[in-house]
Length: 146
Image 1 (cartoon, rainbow, N blue to C red):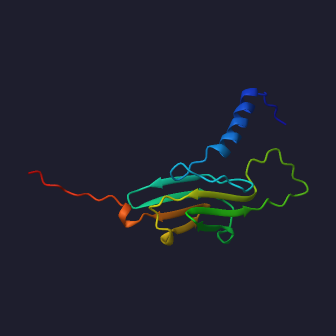
Image 2 (cartoon, one colour):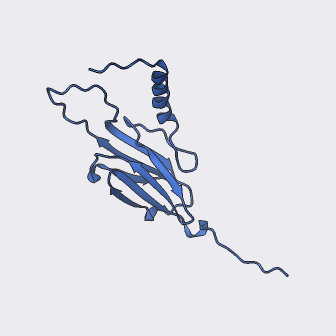
């Protein structure tokens, strides 16, 4: 067994990291609902002229176990990652991955066409495409100078 030197600053850093992952989650706009699951997967949100894109990391979850709903302008992504079966002769030294039910909820901007939201799930990453309404897309108007 390898001995490592105890570093109290590393412990403090780990404590703050755990706290900040639950407090500092990014969202569309700046509003996000509080998650009520056991854990909340990480999400990246991007915007182009025509759509918002949300990418959520949820590895080791089957496509059928992911539920995506939109209710009153709130996008909900939920599911569950089940804990692996423990083997009798296996001794775990550290478990850092999250298990149990998860939920991410985002308030959607008014300029999203909710009926046309598209979702793909590949390689443990759920990608949602939220198209913007036609009236919200920027238009370039050329004005002649007289």
